[in-house]
Length: 264
Image 1 (spheres, one colour):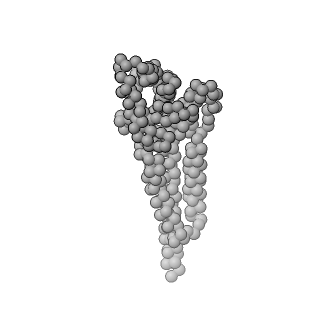
Image 2: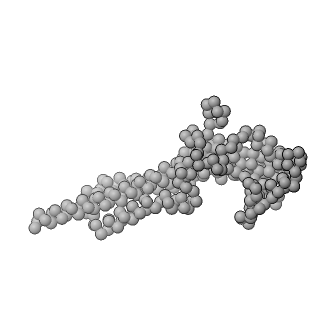
Image 3: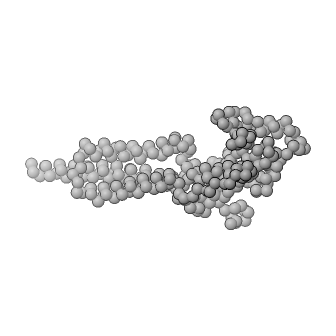
């Protein structure tokens, strides 16, 4: 499917495991890391250039330097001039890199010793789906060794189910509180601290989430919109539960004081 007169393929985002036409045509914060477009033919020629020994454009010594490891940031992985360098299961040098935008993902790899490589371009993306796309790259390398590719995993990611289940439970508790609030004699010394805890939890979820994922909230919203909206739903549910408890407790407290006054 084409996107207007631009000639670019329409991008898609995953929502709860289903592809949906992307509403993010351009990520303004992404200019520093991506949004350079190329066709599959262009990328294939690029791989050929990196693998060939022709020195007309770049001398062999400079090409070797380009593909050499500079920083060993993991025991099994190094980083060079824009390239990640690791090893295949057979112990051969593997040069590769991957990148993504909210609606697309690209991966390129090649094995210099064999003179083979591949490019994978997709026009859909989700942060939880990237591991499956990386498996496609690994399967391609396996095919070169005569191995059969593994069947692709399918279905909604467990994290999506977990967030959806949590949100459903919180909404059910909130509805129960609203229905039972007038019928219960709420104790101020119990419900007031609980409501404050709920407020603190609602305020801390997003900062904690961004810290654990090392990603700003805007990136989470763009690369995993379903996760972002469910997280906001959980935050809102906790805040409303705290508000309902506090309001109901104060109303019951006022009624109790009025009844004591009338008796006096």
